[in-house]
Amino acid sequence: MNELEDIKLKALLQNMKLENPGTGFTVQVMNKIFEENSVLEKIKSEKVLGKGFWIISILFIVLLAAIFFVNNAGVQTDSQIGQLLPEAGQGLSEGYQSFFSKLGTLPLSIAGITIAVSVLIFIDKFISSNSKIFA
Amino acid sequence: MEQKDDIYYIEKVKAGQTNYFSYIVERYQDIVFSIAMKVLKNREDAEEMAQESFIKAYKSLHTFKGNAKFSTWLYRITYNNCISEVRKRKMHFTSTDDVQIADEAEEMNLDGIPEENRAQAIKAAMDKLPEDEYTLILLYYFEEQSIEEISKVTKLSESNTKVKLYRARKKLYTILNELMKDELYTIL
Image 1 (tube, each protein chain N blue to C red):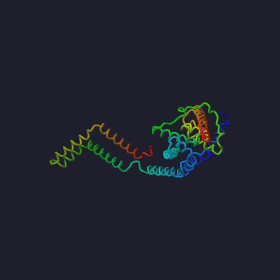
Image 2 (cartoon, helix red, strand yellow):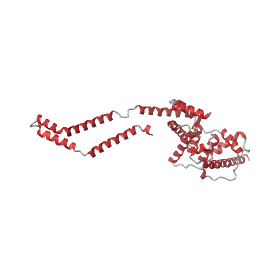
Image 3 (cartoon, chains in turn yellow, brown):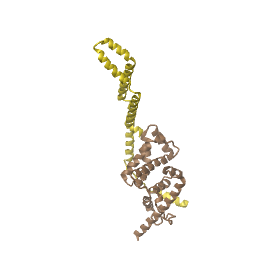
């Protein structure tokens, strides 16, 4: 293949009219880009941690605090209840005591699994709601 | 000059002036669309593919460092998009290896075709080329991309690109010769 052939072919090909996508193509592309931009802006402006997350977190902390309080101060509470309700509350306080003592003896592994599942659900929810960013 | 222009507009887009991307679309839409059209063989699909390629390029514009020509980078996105689409649809992507090349077609002979019809004849011959050869010829002769740049677009080695380009040229001449014979027959 000689150089002259190359030059001739180049000249011919450069005169060739290419297929074109039509007049509104640029506008269509730009509209799609602006659309994508506005969706991305919306996602970015949304709070990563929504109301639901904070409510669940607070409830979880309250529950943990309650368990901690009952476990550590259970004897005290028991004696206070005993003082306040010396006779009638005897059976009730025993019931409470056994319930909370059972709750306090929940194995750590169950708590661990619950926390891990919550975290995984949260990550999944976060990724699926921000799929445009991760795409 | 053209390269400097591209960089200028890209910098503007990167700085948040999205409107400037329309220059890029305007400049490259025909070639991107032509590649998509050749591979997908359907105008609507090709238009969608071309749009997708530009949007993909826009979204990953921050990764474009300017080490290569912008056009090379854009064509690579387009070419990869087309190949993925062909694989998705389980279509056949005709490659140079599938085509038998006539040994006699060593030279381009356009003497029998009037000058005003030559561009048309070339286009007809180009339309008959397989997808990968069409892209190679288009990038090398129409877009004046170097062998190195084409190898980046097609992910072929430089030596393989050279061989394929040589075969594509030969094939183009063969088709042109056949077209000319047909033309003569219709005249006679």
